[in-house]
Image 1: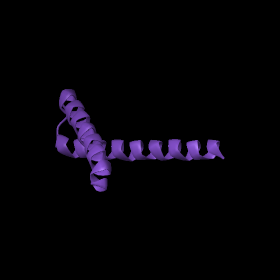
Image 2 (image 1 turned 45 degrees about the vertical axis):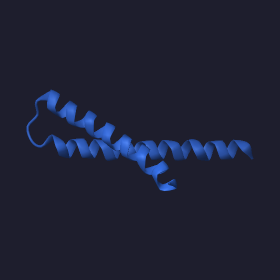
Image 3 (image 1 turned 120 degrees about the vertical axis):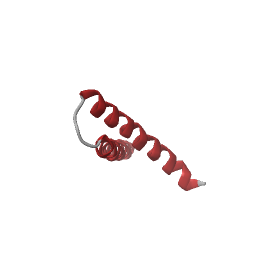
Image 4 (image 1 turned 180 degrees about the vertical axis):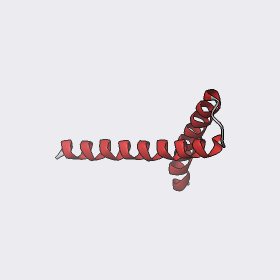
Length: 65
């Protein structure tokens, strides 16, 4: 159960990034495969979100000391 608490939000972030990347690629009318851009956008958003959460967690721990 504990694994799902981490995996479900991560999956939602990746899917959100995928949808945004895919939609923007299609809206601009660029050629090629929009799925690649969607997945790259999704994983980039996941990395950025994880990094931001980590930085905020470290700052909070430093303030408590």
